[in-house]
Image (cartoon, rainbow, N blue to C red; front, side, top):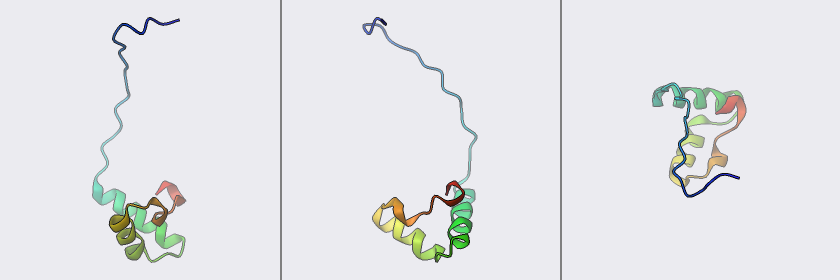
Length: 60
């Protein structure tokens, strides 16, 4: 069993930087492919914070 009285160190792998522009573009394309109005869906998500406005298609 580990001694939880000591500080634990973790190494995490750095993820590549992705621009907001690229993320919005990918989400827009995924929503379009699924037949949704991407502008309405993205605005709905921004206004409500509800992730169901964004599809999981193509990991959007």
